[in-house]
Length: 160
Image (tube, rainbow, N blue to C red; front, side):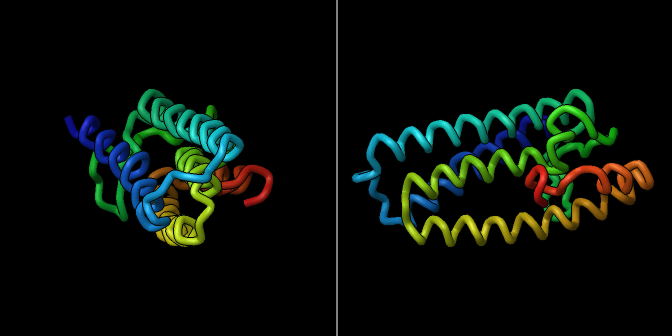
């Protein structure tokens, strides 16, 4: 049951609520986006959400856990296995990368500075969460995690 609650919270927060806040902050209008921006949104949304779902499924099957660990408060069971393959070979936080790709599509679609500010604020908050989570992963998995961290980028493949 905790898994299901974690997935529902994630869906509501990351897929619905944050984009809705971006849209409301941008004036709540969808006029003027045009076909090109709509296609960009759809492509980035599909790619980003697909990467996030792949990461969640992989986490459940291989890591034997759930992604909902918010600022060291376990919402659903944490992973018990270190994941270094599948989407976690792309970067250490592929689920978050997928969400960022999705949000980038929304920012481009809304073409508003307000949506961009919300994206930057969300990014900053999530980086705090990621840094805390990485400390916990090092405690849980020790040298294996340190080796993984050395050879795999934090968020953006080939860059960071």
